[in-house]
Length: 122
Image (cartoon, rainbow, N blue to C red):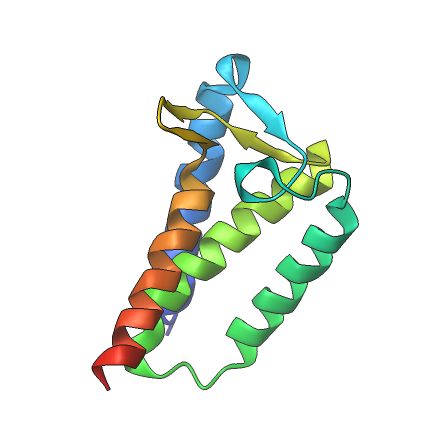
């Protein structure tokens, strides 16, 4: 049976790819991390994404963390695909008070917050 982590990750990746395809013309390529920091270090982000992916896959997959890990894995792989293809990530969601971002970025933040919340609750 497919675990909840991989199902959530798969759905995030599909939504991320579809939205990036739809909004590609009005997007920008971010060659750095969040808020465009560390531009020019694509190799570092690819390495970090691979490490995060391996850690999530090899983790004990405790039930209380599955939702957060699924969002984190999906977001990580979504942006990893962009980094491998475009040497940066496609950002298309623009809100005037924050730098542009994408579905994978949102998923990463949501996943991290869910994991932190569950850890704090314990």
